[in-house]
Image (cartoon, rainbow, N blue to C red):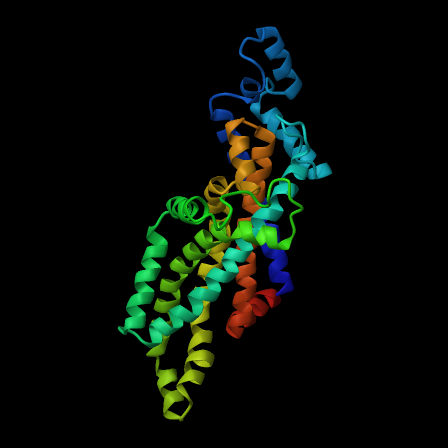
Length: 324
């Protein structure tokens, strides 16, 4: 397993390299540049040209990319923001914590809701519970997150004044766990319902494929309790496709949080991404794109590791590859 993980990490290097090249080219193809957003249009052209020279924007694209890549590989330096002049690594570090907190909470709660409801829906197929679960799943998928977020803000913040409409802490307050928790409720509900809605259907369909297998009929014929048949034998065999879907949720949440963080003014990666795009902050955008690529690769690697824990046959195949 250790050798397999090392090989997977090694193969991700050219993937990250290719991602950075594509991102760099696409950014340079977009109209405008940081100088257009940074200085007044009334400023003399000579002053604007001096600013472009200072930021290295007049260099050929391959030179700009080489300088960025060299600093990253040799010094671990993502550069400085072209707008605020802060280190990009520090900017990302300051914003990644709130995003991980919100995403992680939504992912854990969403999966904790989806798995038991999906299993019960499959075990009690065509019952009232099944119809309610499937309907709720489709609603969770169909309702756009931004629309649900605005509805929740209208009722809970504006009409009933029960919860804050945005931010992570109360302005001028001391913060603290309860304050952060109160501000997390509305965006957490939106992301949790989305995660649960997507995964209930996958858990249900995966369980339905397993419940009628011959080995479960044999287990029932031996006199095992139905709860033991479902929870130990059926659930373990149904986990492989479920683990795949859960692994995909991490990068999906990372991207979906951009919209939700904008709606609820959550000070995470989404806020930083939108402000960097609007100001054409190339250095910060490159750092964020690199972070997104690392998140996707790490999620896939984590999924493969969980495969081996769930199904011993996969672990044996990894060992076979290592010996060969």
